[in-house]
Image (cartoon, rainbow, N blue to C red; front, side, top):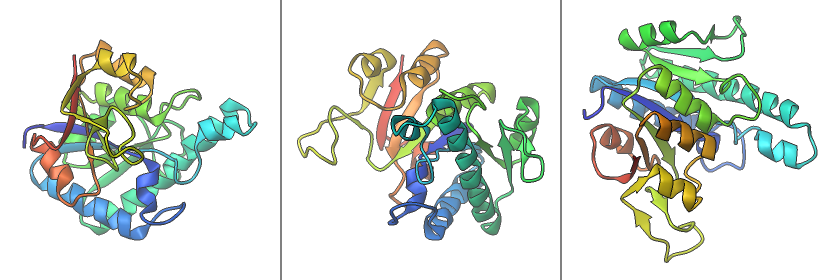
Length: 235
């Protein structure tokens, strides 16, 4: 494998499968099998999952809710997704721990950086839930933060398309894919890879970002192997 330690960011929408909302057991099992293959290659893997399949804080705020309340609901929704993913991984024979930025000891461990690194070193997949534990920060920013804290080699953002495009490829057949980008280019052109705070944090700490399509079987392993199947964002 090209990378030793990876932070994998998966959107909550990815867990819906073909449904309109919620969690698809088939998609959970698919992701678990993909992660199992990567782990067998010797990669240490952290995981951050969004909450768009259950509740999105920004959307709630746009609908009139208080932003702090909406974001707190979103962070709790990420815990639901993390527990579902933990169950899928354990059924696939992958040792796993969920660590939450919001303390809820009855269902998962509180996030402690040193403890998370210990789990990774022992071969466990660590799912980081509840974002940063603070409102006004997305799971993209939370993913970059956790990647830096565990000293990951790269943060990989798994999406529905095979990289970053100049326009939405699902709406415009003429959209052009980038093989490589700089953080500055992403920010200047507002390419919406992830929120500006996450991109800026990655840029300031020289953390590579790799964007790829996770729906293609074997792609997570290919990405971990360093294959050119997406868009690499660096300085």
